[in-house]
Image 1: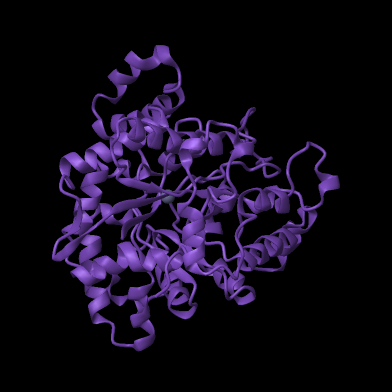
Image 2 (image 1 turned 60 degrees about the horizontal axis):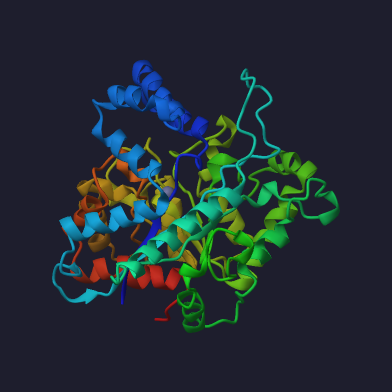
Length: 441
Ligand SMILES: [Zn+2]
């Protein structure tokens, strides 16, 4: 029996589009702290800048914490996550208050993110240089090597690992070619890249078989050559609209704009592949995040998935962050009466069997659980009651270190929340297992 964190990240400083990271802060910070944060992020990869960095960040332990976990090798990052949990929360096994049985392991789903925006450069930008691509191969190698290192270390120490780790591949289907002849630069086509990681998945696979396929993979056999990666190393796909992935065109104008690069054909290829092989997709669904171009602001809007689901109702989809819009300051209790991103996300989750929402990052604030609990117990409509079976626990670690001190603190807030034991168990076990298609209920 696993406890699932179905939305976390294992990445280092060279993976994110740092310009986009800075942009995110630009919107939220004063000019002075903008410069400070920008400097920190830009210099953090240079060894000689260490002392300077320490001085600048002295006032902000959280930022130092985040930088440290992103700078240390990824395998060590996982070990430190485990140490923190064991030291501060789960020294005697993984428990939920009120539930006598312990969870055997923490099932981590680190989501890779494709930060590239190949072909989508902002031509109006005054900048001379820009981040034009970030090869996913680097991130795949680094993350997989980090996971392998973690398991090798545990095995060397003869300790049983606390984590069961199965990542999601990060993919922006719109930046791949459809036709091999157009791939002048030797890049893989969309179909080739999907086959590279998901060839062994198929729609007829029972959740039991899928689980076996996943659990069978021995990470310690991986030493960094991604061509030797097993076809069952990844459990699903993460899409990240703020870096240029439009889940579905919303009008004729958008459809026309997609034509030159066969956008709609690519979306159709991608969704039919995922439905055809029953691959879970997690979509960033919040107006925050690493926005790489102002033009992509609305791409994370869950209303776009409404259109995609009209065409692909069987899509296995998780709308992350429960469709969070930071302009929405009202209490969640009136969810089904309001017109908001989270309402759209909740409606889709209640309407489609395979659609879920996760609460990653939102749990940094204990008040969120109070509202969620009140909302869930107030639901009387049988259709809306389905929502309880559709909410997935997630942390958004390490990104969540911008608002919280440690992984254990995030977990503790969930444990201590007013949700009752059965609700917690659904969020951290049954619901993610159904979404991931690895256990039948
Ligand atoms: Zn995330």
